[in-house]
Length: 360
Image 1 (cartoon, one colour):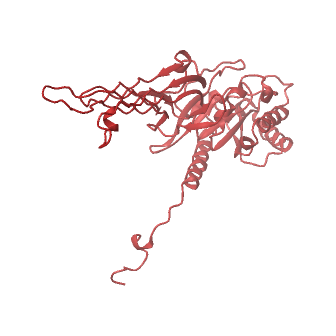
Image 2 (cartoon, rainbow, N blue to C red):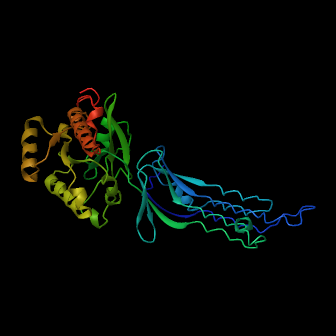
């Protein structure tokens, strides 16, 4: 299925039903009094985060979504029925913004999370509501309130722990295939990856993290060149970036250090916060280097690139060096998850560390 990470929709909650003016008419009941019921509430529009979805493609072909209006009130004290609600299923990671103002309204970050994106209008009052000791035959009623109407922009940012960054054909797709359950398209030409791919990397039976493979970046991406700039937003929620570099390019005239620096510069131009994220350097395709020259080539690259963070040497094709890398990634991701957990103050009386308040 084609990956779609942006869509525009128009939503309309249901209008409330109008109140009713009615009087009780029965034999031998000359002054039966008012019995007009209230109108029903209009239907709400909900959004639910569905972990089984990974694109917004459904909203490309179905833009208008309307909930039912509430029924009008009726005589004999009968209130109108509420309009049917509608629920829109969206992928986890969807950001909902106002299409006109650009204001972020909601974010769906937890699977199964349900939010109300448009409220239905309340029903109007029937004349039964206006009965009083001095107004025994009221003829007042109120119309139903209109439901909320909105033009929304939906934007999907995939929820991944680790994002892969690099030039086209650096081996990102091969790497995610080697370490996870993802099976992206792999070929020997640039821009093989046309949309993000997610893979779950299992380090142990109960230890795993999610990695995202994005289309490769090229110089000028921040200004719109190539494909990768369209998907850089998906790296904004990651905890770690892996900058994968082809250390053994097919074209001998390619300056790998210049390419690596160009990618980092594009990242900085696009979003300084993204540039500030933890970033590790992964030198791929070391199996393509002559054994006797490998160490010298890698040392020369690191010296010229002046990278001060962690550096790993791997071959995604043969899986050489992949196992130690994913173990280190898991340690880093787990540590960040623990650091991001909110601190909760615990009463020492309930931890067993303090003396018994009753029998000290």
